[in-house]
Image 1: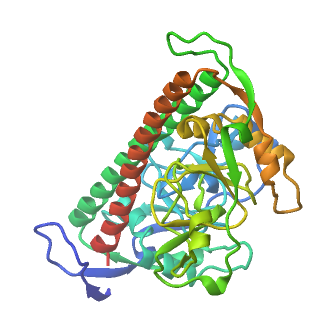
Image 2: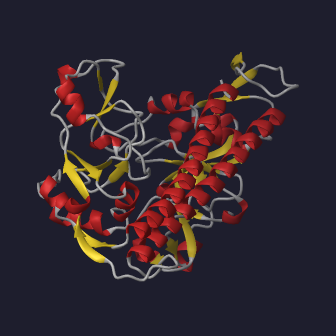
Image 3: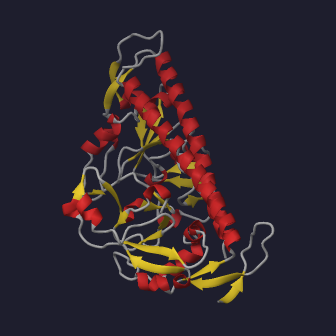
Length: 406
């Protein structure tokens, strides 16, 4: 027991220095979970089989599930996972960990390192969250092997040092981060449900299964080029960019699938531009942008100032209701059509003409367009607020991880 020290932030009543302990002084067993092919034993339903892709962000997710039959499961009786065991991804995204909850007691697993049978009172959640700190991740990188696919050995983990306070302090820290994860999971669920709700309404309203009261006129087919001017940006060069320039240069990378607005937290900036470039390429609020390279057909709205558009990003300047046009492009068929007409090899491309020639039906009544746009705008605002809350919780968790651990 060497190198005693303390974290920057502590719960009241705890003053003792932390120890450094090798993991094999904490666990009686650090072993590999079953490694081999279970393909002949896969079944539609049966015993849940824990794999590396189920371990994410310190938790077990079951978005994808594999099941094994009784025969294969019964062969694993001496290798099953139990409540409180810690599992670590052994290959690929190595070092990701999770604690086995009570509902997964006696679970079979594949391609994981298992930490089991504690030698003394230890809070598994405390260790699980310690593995999520930057310090632990950097240390794990030094003992991984492999180039394209990374690997980590259970024998190396036996010699791995962790910071180790008293059991009571471990419980306090573990409990705090469990609360963080509970809040994060709840908000992820709410945000996901809201996004699903929006997609359902987009389908029903733009398929005309649902109409606002008082509107019964037939919709008419229109080209996108009839509802908006379709333009693109300026071919800036690398030497044009400066640090902390006045104008952010917007590229395809600023248009993200999970946000209705242009991401202004990344990219290059410029300072000196001519009046001509500013007049032609300065983005105005309510402009709609479309990705023209890579994953083509993604869209986002401009809501910020001091943005200049780069070449190969489509810019739609609506001559009707910009909010309606944006939502009209997001019910699915525009993205699918742009994907279908795209050309190129590994990186796909679309042209301004292909964007402009997109066709679909729209309400003939401008007031109905406004109502549709306003309805979905409010949904987007609600989704963005939940997403911001979720992002804040994740940042707070990361901040506390660095303060409450050494």
